[in-house]
Length: 294
Image 1 (tube, rainbow, N blue to C red):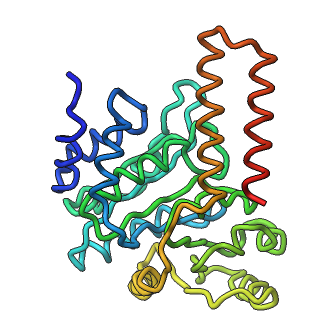
Image 2: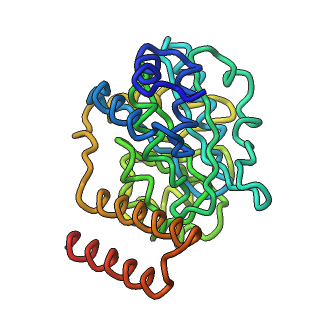
């Protein structure tokens, strides 16, 4: 039975967890009525800044850090939504749900809403559906929204366009430190977090950060909860100071371009869009985006 978009939006805004899950699925799958749902939710959403991206290379402990932040949030009586982007299964296209398995018992707390999303091969360590899903979750009564990305390389900064605050997690012994710190995401991250500072190599990583003029860094040992309370406070303070996320021209152009590409590809799959026309349309999209974003 098709859900009434207006009624579903009202239930999301009222804080019904089942409605939030249903609305995310509808938006992710572009189901019937999802555009109306997003419009109603957009009218109801406030302007509060509470979306935090958690990104960083593989193995730095992002999931452990998110779990530790959740413990602090729940202890303070805060309600949190976590969107964890998993690599897609090569067979089904669905998420492996690894983050859900790693989080532990705090995942079950009533104050925490957790959703795994499949990246489905999207670039930048995020899901193509994330902008729509964030629009849904932003309308729900949650004090904080955490978006954990796939472990990514530094060239991928797509998540920065979608969140109010970007947290970059680094750790010692994670490959070539110098190369790691040359990438673009270091330049757009508002907070740098050094996890696993009890391990050898922490001093070396601190030295690289200082040499590059980056920092200050917040140091934690997420596995033990050390420094996490201070980090949570720093996140809240940074959100309060943040100017607020607005759909800038580049972000809008990229989203429109992606949507046009998907629509054209869908029509080509069903026919009857000739390949030559598809090429011309895609070239036109790229040209317009380039002109508008100069």
